[in-house]
Length: 467
Image (cartoon, rainbow, N blue to C red; front, side, top):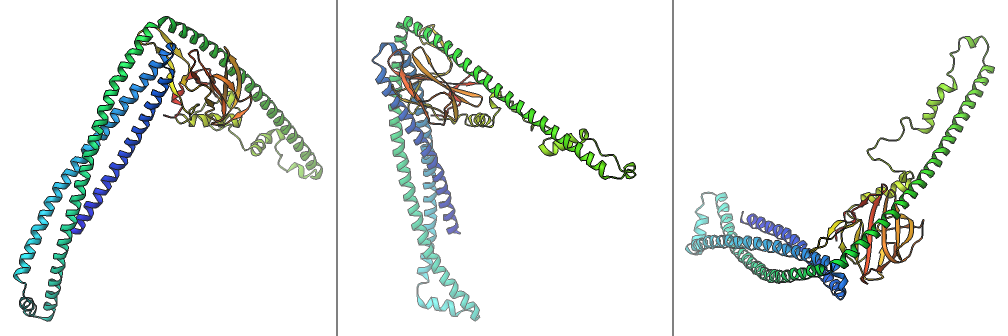
């Protein structure tokens, strides 16, 4: 019974520790990712801080750094709560084991007293030979052996319990040390957070002082945005028109083939009927059932030949003209199935302006973005995020852009200094479409957009995997 209790205790403790360890590993991995992001943000800020025209980018980077540090502090708090739970559980286990050890020692002490009182060989032999029968004597010998083994097991249980207590105490001390380190890390991050907030306030003050320059920048971005909208809409209209032409040509070819098939079938039936009329006697012709006309049998045979009687399978999906081919449908479905898991168009970059409307802190200025602005080193490789075909390579205001079609979806990579692909070229995830150009502030920047066949701009970050 005692063996079973100890086994269950060890198994439960191991399982609990394993689950806690996995959770702790996840927390530590998340902490490392956040620390790396903060280091990257600090490095980017260091690189761009020299320019007075980059306050908006600075502010967005500091804002993201504050969010990352707050998430890091929350992560540390979760780690500390886990450590507190482990400390509490280990303390309870140590108390329970100590009580169990006291009970084992008491039982062993009683067995020693009993053994001492019956220590002589005469008492041992007298106990055996006083048995009424031989079987009873054998049972008494077995009992004495079992009692001796029981005392040995008691000693073993005491030693194992003492070992468990020592292990739990060591684990408890380790948890306390980890908690102290976590507290120190938390205090450091809280101090850094206050510095980040001061830095954010400084950036807001800079933005206030540069309101006129920022207004001009937003106006230029708005003009660029409208030009981009016009260019992308034209590309989509052209793609739709070409897709319709191809679909109509395929439909005409299918109709012609179907009409030819029906004509041949009708001619075949006519010849067969003439042949039958020649071979059958005139008397039998009065009793032979009239065979259906070719026109009556053609639809049934048509279904037998084509294997389709009710048209296309019913589905809730509304197909676009850009999905009239098997390749187009496959690319669309592949793009949709990757939503939230598609790779980023750059290996290392930090979003500076997100999709949608945004405001300039400390001012009344507002702007709108149809995509995601990503700060990258000048010349950084920009890559396609999914299988597709290059729809267009074009120039906008001295900077180049590439639009790739993925079935009924489009991705656009703008602010490129150079382009590595050509129109109608097939691309795969990771294909380098170009390299990042420098923006007005002299820093590398890429604008990434996702658009559907209705020329509606979609939030790119909902399609890309989480960083």
